[in-house]
Length: 105
Image 1: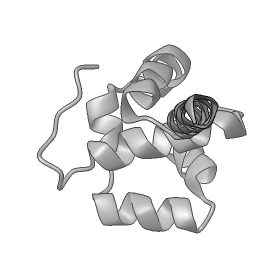
Image 2: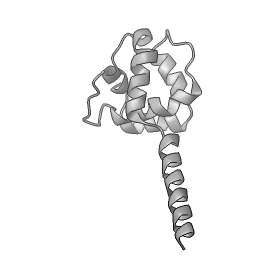
Image 3: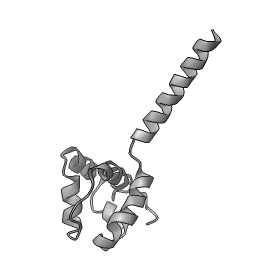
């Protein structure tokens, strides 16, 4: 009985940790924007996120056009790594012009 409980708790812990590390994060997107795009864009993260509403960011992301939109807003950006796109989307969506939230970058 004791072994079964330990195995179940261990499996639950692994699943919980795996689910949190695989998800995108607005805070990480904000850090990535500040590090990778802010200088090339010449605008702050608040201005970038406010270019669209949350619904518009969602439509852009679902259409697979987030990288193209970043390049449109920031012409100096040549390439955006695909692994960063979910984090950028979460950041832009969290701070869209209709969210009422303001990022600190």
